[in-house]
Length: 202
Image 1 (cartoon, rainbow, N blue to C red):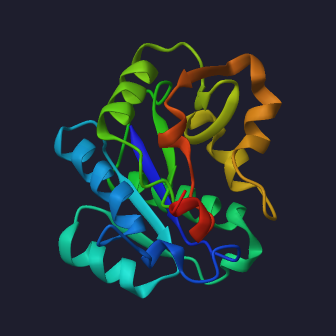
Image 2 (image 1 turned 180 degrees about the vertical axis):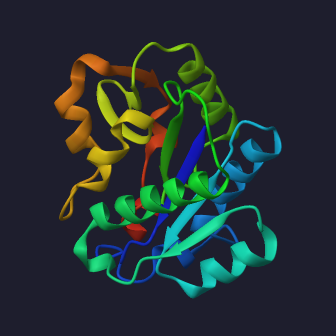
């Protein structure tokens, strides 16, 4: 299992850089990053790619998470598709450097976003374990029928993800392959992404 952590948004609705907003004394992006690190330490993740436009995040990762690879997104205004493309391209590059061989049929990549600070290690561990026994190529988190992030895509969808354009995410690919999708139920609180100060103080 590989993972791409998307942390390049402009926080337009938030009014300031929400990823660096200190939530209970910790930058918002740090919550998800530490959960990802915990999964890596348990051997549940292989390559980890962080896509961001923020030097503060890049410096933090280089100093404290040297096994993660960062990719700078110089044009975040182009939409989330650019971050997805950069992440997938970096992942493929890392795999080629490692000379990865053999069957990639069940290789997957989890996409997680940096503005979901309430995600837990237990939920992501369960999601990885569900993927390992699933016969579907896409595993998407959901609550009461509402799909969200994280999402896991099989290797066979990498090329489609790379071709996304504009402010559209992986759901555009997902909706084309509904017969290959499995849902993964998660608590609504964990799937909540914080887009405004109002949501933080609710």
